[in-house]
Each structure stands twice: as structure tokens, then as C-alpha cells.
Image: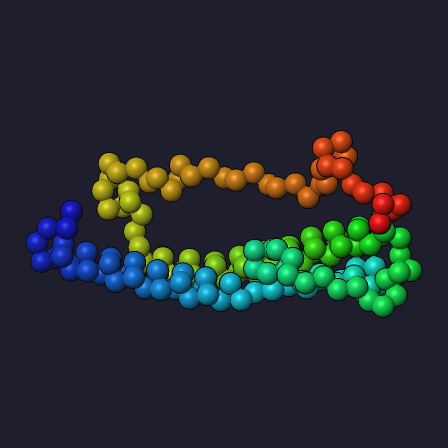
Length: 147
């Protein structure tokens, strides 16, 4: 497969492509790690910012948030968080897809050796994660009277 001078030259090209692809991914990962997204709800009374992983890093309430009920505030926090997380997820995908294009010069395993299986096709697809709240019975929530 990689024997002789021509094989060694092809292997050198392949390794160069792999190193460039890895450098591209590392740069994209650095860029992605800096991403944040912010969303507001309830007429901008509730604002949530998430990091690149969709984890809340800041929650802000406007001075007039007390005009909302606790249930309205909770719903606004949830919706703002979901919107911000969806935004940062989409932007993360854009950043990372650009890096993956650098791997276009790398042949698939089955191109290198006809009998070698392409294991990337065996990776299962993750199921979609629910945005629904947990059932009330499994997660006790404080009543407004408890606050």
C-alpha cells in the first residue's frame, strides 16, 4: 500500500493533510470555546447568556421583573435559555463544519485498502434530546408560597 518511493511520498502527503486537518480543528475548537449567546424573553425582563456548551453563565432580570408571576419568570428563563442554547449550538456547528472541510484531502479507509471497513459508518447517531420539563412527580418544585 505505501511501499517504495511513490508509496512513501503518498504517505507523506497523507500525513501532511492529517496534520493540517488537526490544526484546523484545534483552531476551530479554540474559536468555538469563546462563543456565547444571549436571548431575552418577557419583553426583555429576563435575559439569559449561555457559553459554547449551552450552559447558563449569566441570568439578568430587569427592574420591572416583579410585574411577572413566578411561573412567568420561570417560563421566560426556560425559553430564553433554550433560545440562547439553540443559537450557540448552530454557531458552534458552523465553526466546526468549516474545520471539517480541511479533511477533504484525506482518503477514506476503504480508499486506502479495499478490504478495510470504514468504521466511521458504524458510529451511531445520537437521539434528539428533549426540551420538555421532567414529570412533576419526579422533580419536586417549590410553590410560590415557599419563596
